[in-house]
Image (cartoon, rainbow, N blue to C red; front, side):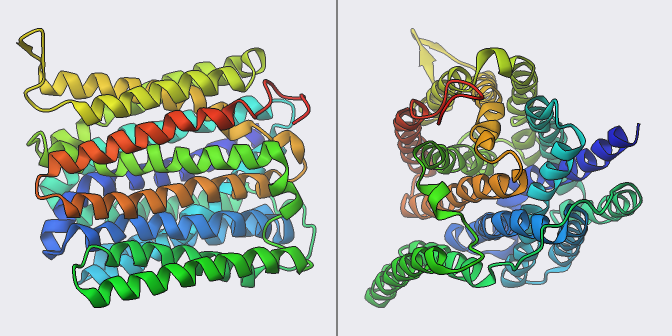
Length: 454
């Protein structure tokens, strides 16, 4: 019975994170207009969260193995709650971005620890249980957009962050009593590696943001930041190859299957998490929907993900990894194409299609694709190191969040460059669709099912 209570405590924390992420996405257009800043600057409210989660995921995975799962999970959840509190109180866009940085660190670090805790509690049914994580996450993504839209319109955008505080404190208390310390392997945490990697990604994102300015000095500084990003990344790779306690196991990263899985996860992050962040803005600016309606439009996607991921999780052993990945990737790609080519007065055979029904269909298709591929994408190659679930989860999450962070930065720049928002979204969605279809190359490099040689 205790392990099911533990699963419930972990699930409650994951759901809280999920609700927060989608609720902020719905509140994003209101936050942008509230502070009166450009889309490039406001995009950092979303992008800095993804950047922080990117850096925190591998760090959380490594720290979980060195210090134990429980302390890392508890500290991460505390940071998430504090970040939510500071976000609710932020008087300026700059302090809001800083608070989102803290919130993102907490959200990113506790996911590897949570996954490791559940894997330890359910060793014989690990693929199914980890797959069901996707379904639990989607319950929050069903609640989040609707709750976020209603709260933003009724109480203002700050209520989206206030909502996390009491629930986060409750999750902390429950976890403190139920979770066991777990095993510790000892060692040192590669903070230098984390700093180099995060610095490289941050320099790249700032460089992309500065391209939104038309001055010559901005372009020069942007170019210098790109060189800095490249230099830090090269030094990071060199440093990781010679340190005794690397953040990443470079020989593992160079292994064909694991590299293919991480490239795929990078693309997946750009094409799915980034898109989810901008869909409410797309619904408001292109289709003229209200804040509440823009939140509701995400519900079909979340329901579809939940149903598809639950079914795929049950049959994952029978179907293997590659089949769900292929079907899901194609479905997500098609949904992106449809988002790129449809307009509010879209017509088929001379008949106008209801814009709300059209978006609902696209969101259902997108959710079906994501729900089908997610259990396989989350489990593939854990078999390479089944005793280091937290590390594998952290690295996988790092690549996915990196794709999302860069995707948000680039999409913000593209949208800022178009006076007509509809054209800007068309470029973003169609480009992501092409990249998503290209990712099929790496799907074929992955094992068909668990136990095959990678």
